[in-house]
Image (cartoon, rainbow over the protein chains, first blue to last red):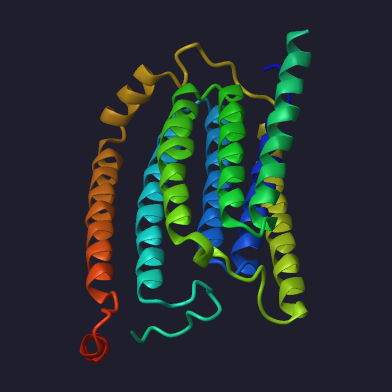
Length: 102
Length: 188
């Protein structure tokens, strides 16, 4: 195979996962937390596709497609929750949404 | 020459990917973060193409950078200025702890992958033109991984129903301008 070694793709995937985890832990806006979770899922997807190429087996790509479907579902439910929180006139701040009471 | 071109494309895509991911986390305005995530997903699609995963790259651009991000941008535009939250919370040691934890996570991933797979990663086997093509993906999906296919459809259905339920309940819970109904929703 020409071009960079597969190790480099895995390094990018590890960086992406770590950046996403940093966003989840650091930021207070639930929207940005959701976006950071997307980054983490995509880092995992890149690792799946890299190993799929490494084994010359397409099951990893199938797994990546399933992860994409799960990510789309997660965005639907997460954004629905954010809109519901906003409609109850609560502040969109994950540090302040600390109780499950209505 | 071809090898050099692949390296150039890889460098551009990988650095665009990491840079836009850092931009998503660091922008104060969620709208800019979502736009940066579109760039991140697009450059990831280029990396998928380099790994000969053509169908996944196309699905990435269509489903993720297209549909999902449009939904994100709609919600952020709907929330308007309410979408802005303070950049980060808590005392500064909490932010330092978050950075340390993310760094530790990355080191763990690198060490584990390096220990378990470093010997096999050096050489990638040659794959045919059909590897990752839509027809092959469809064949594998509907023969070897039929259960995963069906479970994916159930997950999507559950998410659609959940989105509708959340949206309609949010409409009921909306505080009315009249004085009595606010107490009613509290009691419920």
